[in-house]
Length: 172
Image (cartoon, rainbow, N blue to C red):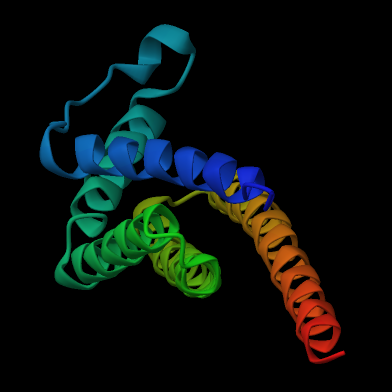
């Protein structure tokens, strides 16, 4: 009996949850200003933070980000379809491409967001704080993506070796 690719089911479910959150944030959420002075921000910092949040909200909905989102969603759906049809190799490959595009997307968002930070905030401390927050989010996203990628690549190599062994055994 052939083992089920549980690793891929788990990774796909986690990715689908992330994609559903992306659908919600891109199509159903609305921007609203927050009064950050209630938590100790100065009026100027509160206004700058709201300005940053508004520009970031708009940035996530620009044409390039939407294109990336739809391509990634299509790759995720393709991975699921291949997995359901028991074409494990194509499911793995399409998921690897999904992860690689995710990594490129994270770099694009980080670089673009740093530009927004530099444009909105005036204080060097606030620029550094927001830049470091963006960097931390990007690094965490990268780590998670690289863990996913390493799992899938490891399993794909392992499956290739098993297939080669089975082929050699069938020839003998």
